[in-house]
Length: 108
Image (cartoon, rainbow, N blue to C red; front, side, top):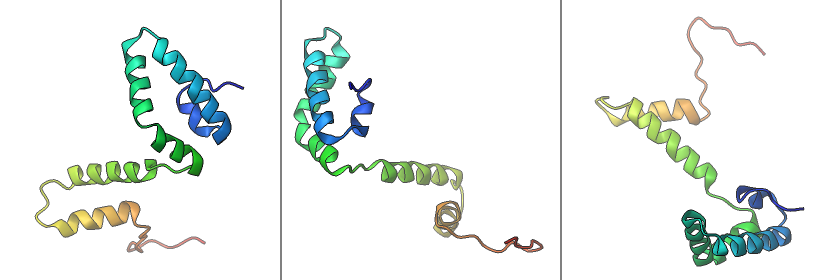
């Protein structure tokens, strides 16, 4: 079964992904579309790291996602007079803190 996209390679079993990546790189190298030729060149340059990611099923996507969310909170907090307000916003949004709000009852 062929992976339909470059991204689909990340969901394949490692042995299958390695074969698929080889086929896609072969195609991209021969392709006359400059973006795909450049992509193939970059993948070949970083092939060892890509193979390691496929072997161990590791990614930094969750960390990058959290960094993006923190950057958004920082933009929201722009103009606050102290950094504690930014830290409080980040903890409320992503720290698992659920303070008891006045006048509200818990359901459970």
